[in-house]
Image 1 (spheres, rainbow, N blue to C red):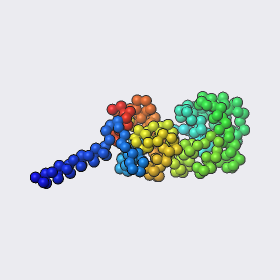
Image 2: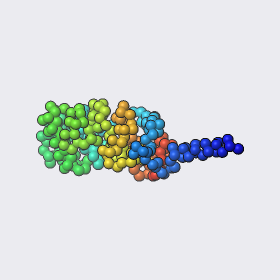
Image 3: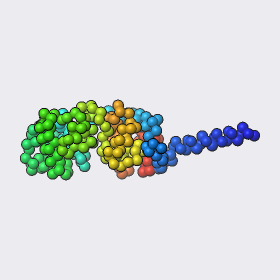
Image 4: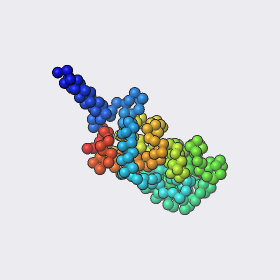
Length: 250
Ligand code: SF4
């Protein structure tokens, strides 16, 4: 009779362990001892990355630009605005203001009217003109290539720095944390933080560095196309089997 009891105990242990590994849908697993979100198990992260590669092999930045400077300006304009709207404004904007010098010496009122459709146009005008002047005066007319330097430009924070360095220069400096990355990283339980800087730190610890640039693009694409803030299209989502977000719709 003794062997039977041992078998039962072993089976119970296996079941308990399986339950720990697979949180019930709608319920986040508890954070591990490291304080990291429980969804950051390397195998799970690798599976998420594989699904993103499968779904979005060609994901890239959707802001149209002809050079790093235009990408910087478009990224500043994209705060609280869609890329589609920024691209519409950018089409005429860069014809009228072709380089940093043109923006630096623009007439503020005129520039404000040009970028008004992107919202927050007064602040954005100050940032665009300030960044252009700094690029001319401190960096010889070229967008700098390090995070440290790019963060000295007015109106530029880590998100913009990561977009420009990653997309224009292919320099891996961090992970872009915009509204989509913030939302999806939480839904996918890759972080338990809401503050962009902390979320970026969390992601940088669990995503392999060589994937940082592509991961940013892919998550943004997934957020725009499938995992919407309201009513995510979970039924169409190729990450569904790995996701236990509490607002899943399937
Ligand atoms: S299953 Fe739903 S909530 Fe989870 S990642 Fe996919 S779309 Fe987003």
